[in-house]
Image (cartoon, rainbow, N blue to C red):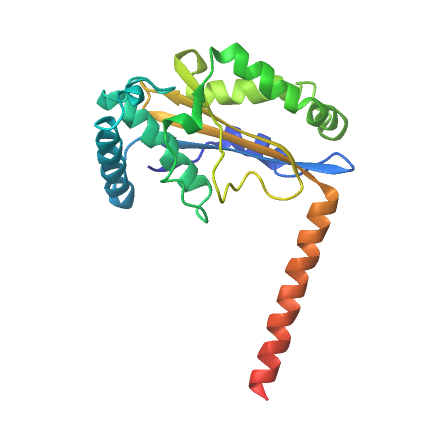
Amino acid sequence: MKFLEYTPLARVNAFLSNVNLGDCHIQGALEAYSCKVAGMDKKLSRSLDQEVLDSLNFSSSLSTSPVGPLSTSASRRTLIYLILTLNHMYPDYDFSMLRAHHFCKESGLSAAKQKIEHFLLEASKVWAAEVGDETPLMDCLWTTIDEVMDLADCDVYACVPDFEGDPFADQGSIWSFNYFFYNKKLKRILCFSCRCVSKMALDQWTEEDVSEVEYEFIEGMDMEE
């Protein structure tokens, strides 16, 4: 899959990268990818496809899933795109163990919008105060996503992680979400990943990073001597 760079996303991403709410910070990102697989993605997609097919032989209940009947190549392909997108967004993690039950399909675009806007209510207030734009954050967000993805033709999925090594469940995480807007016609997928982290946890991570750098520096000095 190839990362697609869209100028309209840059402005929203710049704001959502770090929204200071006082006791907590919101960190979000929107990334779009083409659904053309090549190289390592192609190798992994074949492996995942075979694993899902093999699992169908052991449980007929797996034939239905949030992405559709896994007995069809189209549904398996959708699942694979979701997994590959997460792998690209979070290269330090491996999501190849995820399966269809780790995702859910939204009943419609309006349902996803309502949930996202609920989470970003406070961020919208910061946007209005700091950016000073006449266009509200939510209007800017949905206009931008629509421009990139053509929302009318998108299926919307959400990740429901419950596995060991979940990057969205770091200590200090108050809430998080990962929504996928998948346009089959355009062969394109956009992931909107966002989380809210307590300021105390952020400060602690910063202190740990500084301590680690200082330790490596001192250790290097000792080796030179």
